[in-house]
Length: 265
Image 1 (cartoon, rainbow, N blue to C red):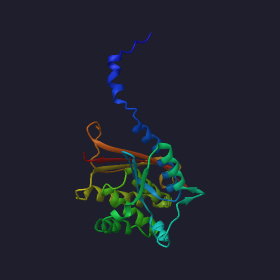
Image 2 (image 1 turned 90 degrees about the horizontal axis):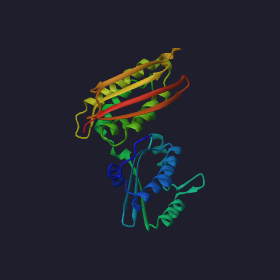
Image 3 (image 1 turned 45 degrees about the vertical axis):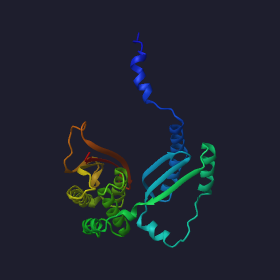
Image 4 (image 1 turned 180 degrees about the horizontal axis):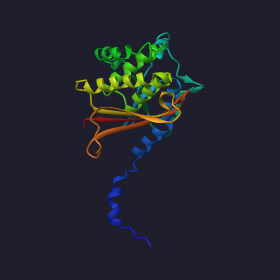
């Protein structure tokens, strides 16, 4: 027989759960609008780095911080007006239904371009690192090299999430031949050394660690490559360590990417 629960011990946890109307509204927006809108942006090849949601009185704020690739920027510059239609889905009608369902008069939706927050001096320094491997690793993929330089600067400036940075690291690995895996590891090591050594007020990174698992260098057996720069403590209770992982699908098989980032408090 199990021991009966004491209501006095459960009451503090019950007080922490706030089932107010504001939290219900936030959850509905998170499920029905923000996730679907993020999915539509990803179909267009636009990365959502951060989403800000707020509710004051009768007004709802939804801010999307997005990163446009170089090819997308060149494409969208040709158009003066971009219609808000994707596969027959009108965003205006979706917002109208949400406002009527939530009894809200105003919904403020903004798309903030993170590309404008790239520091040119840091971008020039990091691009010199990628430029050394341009002919070997990024042959016929100059735009991907530019996007990697921008993403690295935004990651150092703490303007994007770690998941977005890891996603672009995985994209660069997809376009590399198996004979160039060693050069790719050297490139990532140089980039990580640059990230840790940047002395700016906005750089929160103290240490960074990347683990790549799979059939590296074209071998039949799976192996593991670990790249560490800076300090990565084993005891993570009192440390701010962000962990992300993805699967990268290439012509040579599936590779697992795991990233640990040690940040300041």
